[in-house]
Amino acid sequence: MTKTLSIVIPCYNEQDHILSLVQRVKASPAEPKEIIIVDDCSTDRTREILERKVRPLVDQIFYHEVNMGKGAALRTGIRHASGDAVIIQDADLEYDPDEYMIVAGPVLNGEADVVYGSRFLSGKRKGYLANRLANRFLTGLSNLFTHQHLTDMETCYKCFRREVIQSIVLTEDRFGFEPEVTAKISAMGIRIREVPISYMPRTREEGKKIGLKDGLRAIYCIWKYRR
Image (cartoon, rainbow, N blue to C red; front, top):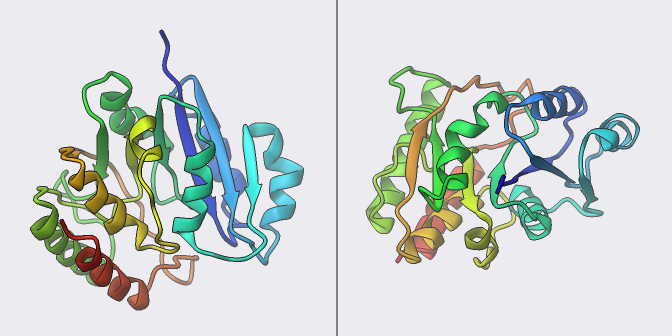
């Protein structure tokens, strides 16, 4: 039986990227796929673009009437996913949808329950030094408590068997989703597999939203959800 990949795309103020991103997702080699977008109360033209240009290309769009954060948007999308596997896609162009099957393949094939796409396994240095150092620190701290051996806990490309991710009670509203879900997956005794992926980082001027406050929250979440 052919298995379906659900792609959950949280977005906030992505008027410059959302249509291009969805077109790339639509054209990606993963088939069949279900595309779910959750707009987290954008204040720019994102909602207009979603309704006028994106809706015919996707399966479901949900709108938050209050801005709650990436984690909250992901909860909405994951709750409505119906595919055999669920992968997360940020609404920018940092991650390549053509690589879905690199990450989702082991889950769809029944070889793994959870797969993370690592930006660092290839050995190529991508991203700004401060961000790379922060990621290395947070991943190492997370590994200390989860007993995983990850190189990139903060990656966007996380793929889960749907029954696994929908069984987890998630509470973090912003970027604390990453350490929270990693800790709770680990508490289930699931070994997370990593595969190398490519990465095209963008700057804050280009719309990157994560910052120092989110890094501090990640440290708190690693401690809060420790095993």
